Image (tube, rainbow, N blue to C red; front, side, top):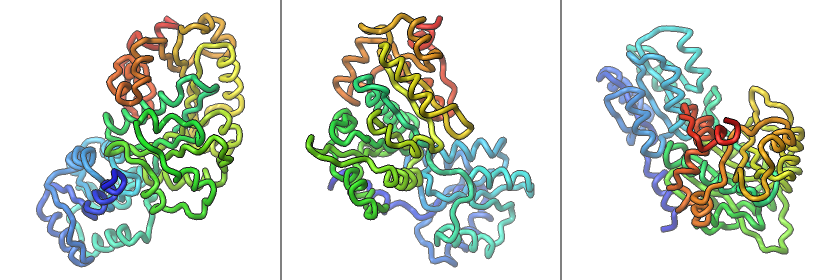
Length: 395
């Protein structure tokens, strides 16, 4: 069985609903509600939202998740932690002890479908579960995935290596559902670094966008790891398949409903034609080396993308700092207009690891340390600074 088919079988075998509550009375009411709906494959665990977060980090998410926040401090933060390890399409119903309208509003804003306080009422719970499982109501809050562009300002600056390594670490080390989409259809290296064989799904999504649906994506993606997928194509050199912006907008919208993080490795030549896409709520990671031409192009792309907003921000990763042809520190900063946000030094360990693709990169301590600020910004964790970035250039 292929990796994609295997993953499809795993997802199909998962429970429709999972329940993590701390008292038997609530369990009994929820069981009755599920019986009313004919739901027989639900999983029940005595526990709370912390138990659910731990288990969701290790397995596929159900369609409906019911969690208990009784005696939990700062439930909003606990919901955020749970959301990070669940697939975006999972609906969450929260139960607790407090009859508090402020708590209710906070949880709804965080993307929770409903909040009920104990003791639970059978017909109310039945109705809420039916609404979720029938698809009659979408989750109200901002629980979609996060969009991350990795844009190499020039070819050969290492943008794909950064995209591949960051996506892999988010999926494998931080247990986030992650998709990497490689927009270089004729010479993309993402599949090569993952030691995977790309199909034609991505090219077909631009040639015939009307065919793209969830089933198309499930069949077309390449499964790299339990929580990491790749969407890429490697077209013949004479191929004229173009990246269509309208098709891209639709594809991005669909993928953000399935993955916690969507990385798009976008070459500069394609990015010029994707103005609307680049202005979606996102983080844009501009990657350069230390050359004069890269410094000039970083400044040009910052101007093209525009200033940061509450929904969209841009950061600059200076890769291979100190390699042959790099400008002195002061000249580079003057050419760009501001210091880089993250600096990856020229390092033989990183260079040797990149030749092996993800097999080498995933164990490369130097690259992992250098990318820690980017990973922490995406996950919300606190990064511990080291001497391998920023301080080496700017003291």
